[in-house]
Length: 251
Image (cartoon, rainbow, N blue to C red):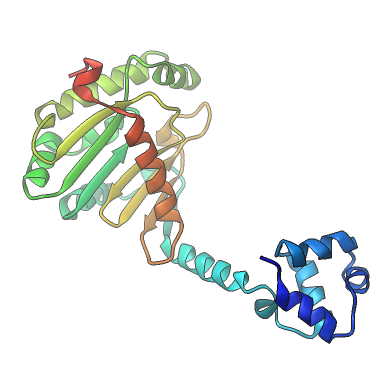
């Protein structure tokens, strides 16, 4: 829709599109697009235009208000940045699983630190599932090209696939139990995602480095925020493309 507020303000100020463009320092066609396509100018041009028109930026471009609210909410979502996975407090991983009451969503290749480092991981997941917690785990298919490529990039070659198989061994007793669903994926993994109810831990991946050496984002879901939903959407896309464990013959 055209930006009628901007068009009206230009007329009320006794200016033309060409004159405003000259004041702001842009091409007249750019100002035309601000009006006809409701484009939001870059901040310096926005400030100059609002000053020339003696109008508030939020009035001329109401979408800025929504953007500002979204940015504020997303900042509120951000809890902490850990420089590497080892910097995440050890108790946080276990306490998030213990206190989860609605859902646990995990997207990893192997996640051996988690399956091996959580005491009686299979029993813990079984217990959660029996109490109505939805458990969705997606591990890398150890026979997939994606897992082989990650191993080559990290310089461990078959090591990643071996870690996946070891994690599956830790999880074996939980396979097929009520409330627990385990799948395998063969997608390129850009982040490992650990979701416990309204909390996310996102282990970023850096080319050529193991996930353990890469930063971890701690995100808490808040109304109007974008980060939590952004990563959750990624999880759901991989989940829809993954296959139940038995279908891959890995069980």
